[in-house]
Image (cartoon, rainbow, N blue to C red):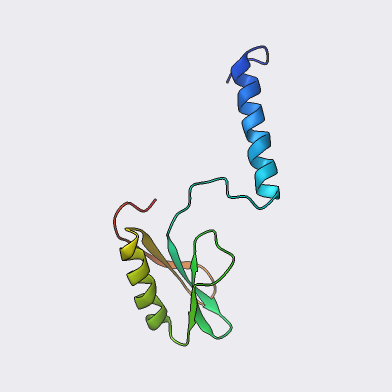
Length: 99
């Protein structure tokens, strides 16, 4: 860690403050991922892109949602994260360079 008298200390501090401010303003501060989450929904199951508040689509059956999420993830060389009804993660399927 840099000393308080070094420029690197102040640059790192400024970057942290700027990121926190941006998050508070609703500005994305991390790179966009195309990871698709299959999550429980009041109408059955839904697909939500990681970091998104809006749903991509809703489905009656989890298997249908998984099929659609896999197609999206394959197009982006990304991943699908499948959740259980209680919201915990059941499985993850990677297609390429997903982080």
